[in-house]
Image 1 (cartoon, rainbow, N blue to C red):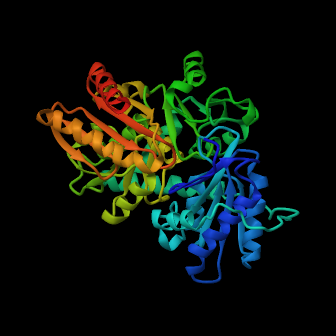
Image 2 (image 1 turned 45 degrees about the horizontal axis):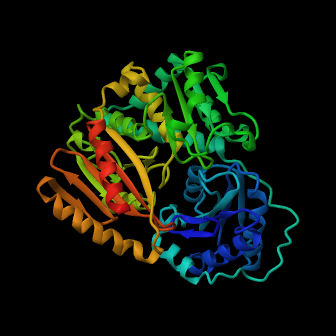
Image 3 (image 1 turned 30 degrees about the vertical axis):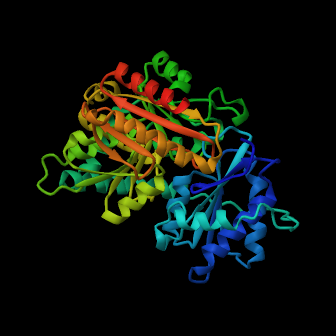
Amino acid sequence: MNDLIISLSGIRGIVGKTLTEKETYTATNLFLKNYIESQRRPLKIIIGRDIKPTGNKLIKGILAALYKNKIDNITNLGITTLPIMEWAVKHFKASGGIFVTASHNPIEWNGLKFISSYKDGASILSAPVMQKIKDKWNGKTENSSISIRELPSEMSCTDEYNRDVIEKIKKVIDLCSSEKNKGDEIFSKIREKQPKIALDACCGEGLQIPKSFLVAIGIEENNIYSINIGALSKCKRRLEPSPQYLAELKDTIKKHNLDIGFAFDPDQDRLVAMPLWSEELTPRLCGKFLLELQEQSKTKYIKQIAINLSTTSSWEEHGIVVTRTRVGEINVVKAMEKYNLPFGAEGNGGVILKDINAGRNSTVGMALILAYMAWSDFSIKELEDKLPKYFMVKDKIKIKISQKKIHKFLDDEMTTFTEENKDRIKHIDTQDGYRIVFEDGSWAHIRPSNTEPIIRIIAESKNEQTTNLLISQLKILLSS
């Protein structure tokens, strides 16, 4: 997989090979022509990059395209996070944003994510617009010399962001509990308890933003333990923050008798709390906290939540309306917009609070989990033990057929599978591949990748053996 990947979530490639300043120049021009040109003038664009050092080089192509199109009202946030970018587009009423990131892809990869105007929600660009960009990419980069001598001065808005997030989360706590100043009370408890916290943000530069947020809450610096503090190239784990890659963080928590650890990917939209056994539990605990707050309230602030098809079914156990969407945070965000929902989640560690930004936000996740611990007087493991136990397995299988034929192949195979198993199937959702719910409560989600010749398989049940058996059955079926 060495090609430039243009998907509905952004553009990714290997820097210096499939992704150079010329590709970022071309991509920016397409973003301007297919989206920004329709915005009201004067135009204002916010740019930024994650912790990968190749970001500065790629931004030069972005700037060349902006200057060519006579856009000079540009705010450069420098090294920042995707949640802060989305917040900034909304907060500063910008026409859009361009963020240099390839999320959790390996260090040799980088890419672009485009953010819509504050009037359109300041979220990752909608699928129809990204499809236009993909369709108009003709395989050739535009022939233009990239000669930006220096980048615009960087402007940090992290302190302002931190203050705004804290105040808005306090307000959400007040609304859920129907108690004025309940948020202030709980945040005071966090400061009093002074939890000991480990942070793993892949490198030293990545630590600055989450650490500054903890300090803003009132956590003393001597209670914050940082690991992976060197250069990104020296990171001791994979950049994807899944529990199986976070052994050092888990060991640090145990060695220093810490209360909790937080791990991030390079763009810091996803959050994994340790020593929880699954990234699914990070947003799950955040949602459970807010729902518990409102249990005694006559007016329910959260009446419905949005999650994707691959997220744990334990959400259904709260008895509120659960809307499931296609995989991809923009699909969860669009459902939240459609039904005016304050809270949404993705099982990969994605916590979405509409009042702050229209996307996953690790800062929000940290604040809600620390608030839950302070409010309940329970440790993170005690909170985990109160959740129903589910066993989820995520797998994939390579298919030796062309990308265009994968959907028909999957349709044919799943038609056979569902016919053979119709007596034990309760429900089938086909909005994104096949999500099959069985009579015993177990389920499997089988969907083709949009960018690779693979089929992703996720299964979950309350029995580990049942989950593994389901995965095995589906892999055998799709391999035959």
